[in-house]
Length: 454
Image (cartoon, helix red, strand yellow):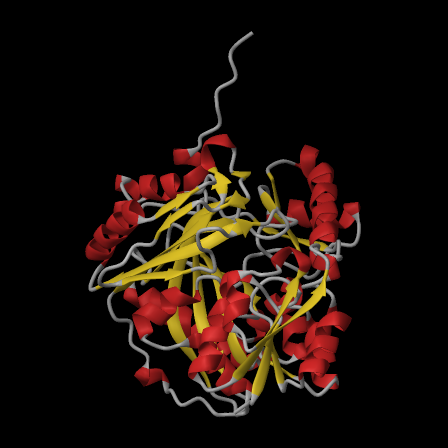
C-alpha cells in the first residue's frame, strides 16, 4: 500500500478521497487554487499546497504544477478524482513517467476509451452493440453530410474527446447540419482543447443506463451492476438510481456482461463506467466509457456495500481484486440527488455565494456527501455542485419516501439551489412509475413556452 497520496482535485471528491485514504492508513496531500484557500476539505489533509490562481488552467488543469507539488510532498501516487485531468491520458502518462502511480487506468486505455470513436471500435470487436454512426471523427462538412444521410436524421453530433454534454448537438434536418456541426466543434474546442466531433444516430427518448466496473492488472474484471441516469437536463445528470426501475432482469444481465467483455477487450484497469442508451424496446447501445470514478459512484456503493475509492487505491497499489462476480449483490434501492447552486426558476442560472445556513438531513439510510458548511463561499470558478444527497432503503417506494423526507429536511441558505426541483421530481407520478427518459425534464417539467401569435 502507498504511504502518501496526492489528491489532484477539489471539493466533494477531494474530501471523499481524503476520507478513504485515512481509513486505509495513507497520508494525504491536497492541492488547491487561490480561490480555494482555507476551504473545508483542506483541513482534513495531512498537508496542502497551493498550485496557482483561481482559473482551472492555472491550477487544477496545470500538469507541471501538480507534478511539482507531488515531488515536493514526496508522494507515491496521485488520485485525479473526476473532472479536470481525470481522463487526460497525457497526465496519466506524465504521472507514471515521473514515477508517481496514477490512480486510474493506463494512459493507453484512457486514450483508447476517451476517444469515443475508438471506444466504439473496441466495443464492436467485443460484440457489444453500438449506436450507428461515423467510423471516426468527421473531417469535413461533406463527410458529415454523407454520414448523416446514411444513418438518417435526426443525428447527434458529439465531441470525440469529452463528455458531460459539452460539444453535443441534436440535428433534425440537413439544412441545420453545418451550423450545428460548427457550434459543437467550437464548444468541444473550448471544453477539451480538441474540436473533433463524430456523428451517431439520435435515439429518441432513450433511457441512460451505465454499468460500474472494476478491473485489476491481473486480467480480472467484474461489474457492480447498473445505475439509471436518465433524469437529465441538457445532458447534465440530476438524479441517479440503482437498480434501474424498469430494466428487465434478462436485459440487465446482458448489459452488465457486455460491459465486462468490453473492458477486458480494452485492457482496462481500475474503476470505470460503461454507458449505454436503452430504446423503447429495451435494445441497448454502447455510447462511451468514463475512464474514472464518477460523481454518482456512491449509488453503487450503497446497493453493493463496496467502497469504490478504496478499491481504486488498492488496484493502483498492485493488489488483485479480492472480489468475485458472485460476491456482488444488488441489495435494496438507492437514489442520488445532485444539489447544485443554480436557480431552476431562472434557466438554472448559477448562484455562487456565501452559505449562511445549512441543515443536513439524517436518519436511517441517508448519506450526505459534501464539502460545504456554514460560512463557506461557493466560488464562481468551478462546477456548481454543493453536495450529493443519497438514500438507501429495501425497495424503490421506501427509498423514494426516505428521499422525499430528506429533501424536505435539507436546508441550504444564502444562495439558490436545485432543491425545489428535486422535491418536485420526487413527488411526480411519472417519476414514481419510472416513466422518464433523457428528455423528460425538458419535455415535462420545463416545456418550451409558446410564442404568442402575431
